[in-house]
Image (cartoon, rainbow, N blue to C red):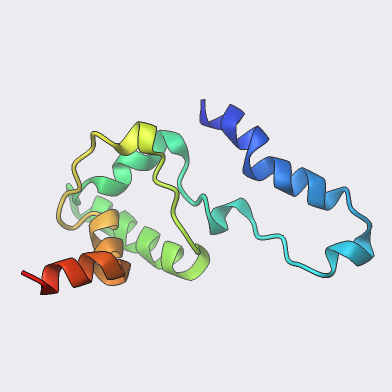
Length: 110
């Protein structure tokens, strides 16, 4: 259950930091969960699917813009996504093609 994991993972850090005195908290910035966990664990497979119609393409395009603007990393929830194939035109296909330095170097070696 991703919610249980989150309680003892990223949300634990948030709870500890927010309990500190204000002057101590001014030394660092608490990022919102969406900065590193922008995708709910129950919806990760939809980020690997190619657009099925114009409405879905519009949603994918908006989601890519949102991720590029707000996220520093994307947790892929391996338990949920390890068996999912990445389809061309999907959110993950776009993000990996644009940002994965390891993928780019592997492609240029062939």
